[in-house]
Length: 314
Image 1: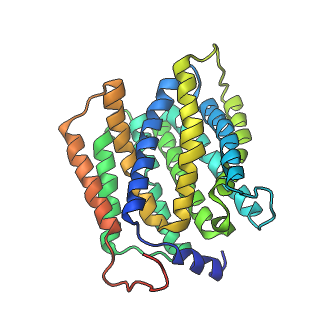
Image 2: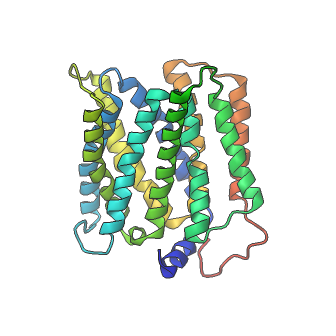
Image 3: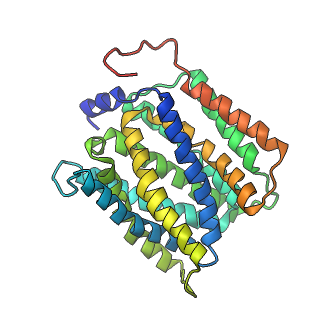
């Protein structure tokens, strides 16, 4: 990344406004329920096929919305290389996550996936010029501890296969962070969100399709109405809309602070599992939620040692 790109990206790394916080809460609620949607559709549609179908369904949604907004998808604007790199990472990210779930438990995967904010914070420090204070780093750690407490990681029969699954999910989290950094620190930052995400969704379709074929996934019967509705939710709303909103937010606000907010997602997933699937919800969850909230407050608390740049809007 060039110095000009880094300084330009850092200039847009401003703190979250109340409106941005409200949007992030909406995204986290949507993503939390998405975990339940994937799980409920599994009897009819295997996981990597789900990921491929949702990408295939989301792409026309983004193209239509972008066309209505006047986005020039095929204009030469210097984003092709960055877009292809982001697309490759986006596809491999979901291959690693879904493959990792074969070896490790869903609860362990949910915790290890949310190492992503740490990777974003490190990458933002290295490439985007964003700086977190010691207090903000403590907030990240506190939120992560809250996620681990909420989901529960203890598992007595941890062997090499489980650890391999954990490592694959961590790799998925690292690639999630990497796509965020590429979207903010390269020419993709100047592209419309629909185009920036379009690269990733389009390239993920063949990657996920090949991975599904190699894994031997098949659909033995026509999916029921519930599974079809859940796939529509994933494709149209989650990928076609919320992912686009996420990349629009990444262009405008601090990547580290936005990524830290995703710690709330698995908490909403736990609540959704309680409401929809009647999973157990214990008092420990309340303590965990408090840890996440306090951690997010610390991450988003302004550093008194840093003087605000008058040229950057608040």
